[in-house]
Image 1 (spheres, rainbow, N blue to C red):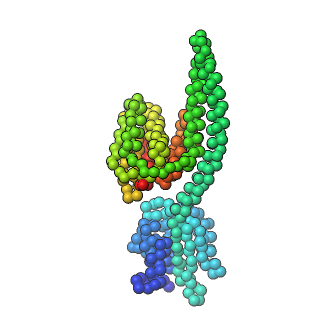
Image 2 (cartoon, rainbow, N blue to C red):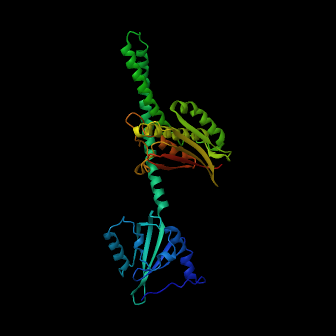
Image 3 (cartoon, rainbow, N blue to C red):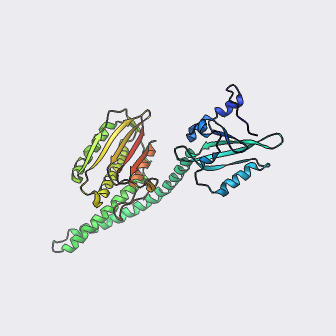
Length: 367
């Protein structure tokens, strides 16, 4: 026999379910949904009228096989155990995968026959993001230690190589082959030196951090001036639009470095798009604009470059991840930009569509 939930607003038992911050679902002994609380509606996006009378199978994400559910229900219906708890990936109304920590308990009558089931789900996304961030920070700490030692060793050796190459280049003009070779050595040594500078910046991101009030408008004007000539040479239209916002909390030099890394990335994306014969002759633009929100200022850099494939969106901030050809970059620019941003409590979000460009948004707390 099935039963119904009496939604008596004066009942402390009902209020315990209705006001709980975790998502709660109650079903009868056949698994048909009798009740969901408001937290469940917010978490999954469905309302009562859409789910009452159904079984929870519409939440299945396809991430778990039949054995998983078989073992789950074996534990739930076991009289000696009577419950199951663990991590599960469900699907919301908007078709989004949702990791939750779920506990399902059997409700039994005095004669031990099954009355129904109650499931309590806790949103696991924040926990997962925290785990991911902790792993990334541990990896970055180890990488910084390694990179700093490597950078100093390479830097010392490069100094010697460059000095000898400059000596060869200064030899009499009759030795043109020697001069040409020396010039190539210098160019390649300078490229490696640039990589070393990136590594050293990466190692020192958290050192000497002096948080202060920073005005956005003059900083963006300086960045605009910095890229004005380069934009003309590259035939890219740079459009800066900003308003007078309240100051932000950060370090002006580091924010400048973050924007430079993001703008350089936008330029690289446009250059990559130009290499596509089908896109030859296309006009390209980079838009930089600001927005003010309740607790933060957003600076967005939107380009008309090649865009980012969906499978790479989770990787672009990883150290040394790059899609460039060998010798064209080491993949530290975006990783360094993110690390610099996180050091003063900010974050970077990304939207992108392959072939249509990307938008990187820098979120910085107000002072």
